[in-house]
Length: 195
Image (cartoon, rainbow, N blue to C red; front, side, top):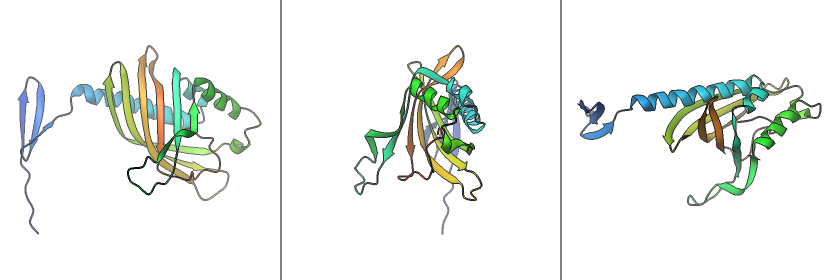
């Protein structure tokens, strides 16, 4: 079995560094891109920590007034050309009022599925971000591990989130979140956790 060496060479023109790998030009990541992804990562980590700590009142303040928070239902399709996600059926399809009502309900004695509260842990990775027209578009992978009561088996969900964020005087705010879960059948005893 033979191995082929890869030659690399750096060229700098007008403060833009370009990497050549085996004759293919690959633009280097700019400082602005690194800072943008760091800013988005910090927001997503803060958001996840608030959910995991059960501080949903603070979490909902990270939403923009015109937020849309959607998670379409997934179905298994045999044709690779078929769309797996519904455009008419959603597990979540909320605006700010809907999110606030969900959070408020968890403070009542009628939220039986969360009494006692679940123990959640969010893991967010593979974060990308780009800024166009004053809005930041981000994708990330998310894994949610949830433990309930004394059950020795945790519930686990994985998926992709596509977010739109806006800068405000109070920091970044979430304008839209689309959640595309890997599972067709949700492995949660009740959908009471924000993803």
